[in-house]
Length: 394
Image (cartoon, rainbow, N blue to C red; front, side, top):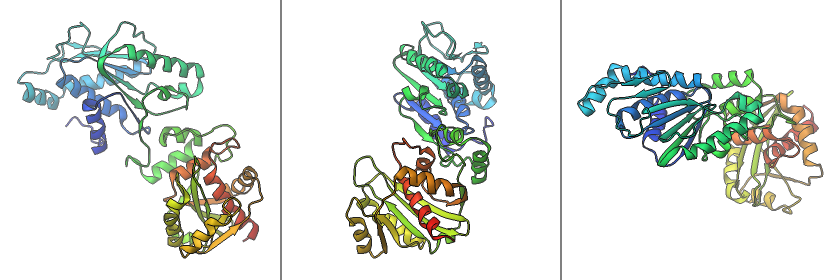
């Protein structure tokens, strides 16, 4: 009724959490996901329902704040809001205070003398201010990506909010990450809603944006993750197909984890001329617990044999693959892992087309890869398939 026709059930969930959830919360969602619109609706309902609480709304700059305060004021003037308020309370909805940075609705019973809703930018002083509820929205932006000093300033500002929120109060943070050391690093662990899970962007929308910006920027703004912009071997965004038949009669590879922090990675692939069609899965689990799932994918895509290294496990994985009725191709690895990845996978990267359904974490580990990367299981497995076909020509 207020006219926000693009909000969905997902936004309803967000708004309910903003209003009725417990404890401090961080919600990260991709750019263009209507996070700020949802916050504006939540603030509108907050002013109507909770006359005993005062709120503080914080954005990066004062101008950004004024935009949302205007939205809240406009919502409260709408006949739908006025009608709902009268149905709930029997009174008319008025706004005794309404400036570019403050709004107070009728029914507010605060004793401090401050407005019911106060909006400030991160460069404003918050010394001496107090609030029952604090909403931060997009206090991290492109400036934080470029400037270490800005990141440290905003982090210090966020720390100071603990002295502003009243005992028993709540801080709710919304935004998009820009840098691994930005203020989100000191906020509660976020609930993440990336461009693949909100349902707000089509596949064409995602691919168009992916091609329009550097991979590190797309990863931060739309996949809500950080990848190495410096020393990265793989900067060209991956290409995708939705035709599994393109992998039929290919081969597979499993890079096994036997505990610790390693991942089990599986890659299926087939070469067609100068194009490699690949499909990847990755699990943070011991290979025994995911082998059946990996072999099921290999069988579905008709990729065999399943190659695996026999150096460390003395051929154990190859025997397990055969015991489950699949063909195994055990080999002894003699090549340095970084050289293998930087040679074969990097050489083929621009000629690889990925099958839709490839794990996002698998692709992310490849895009994150540098010589000093903490994890390299996915790029290692993909490089082994690239090496297999590279050595066999067309």
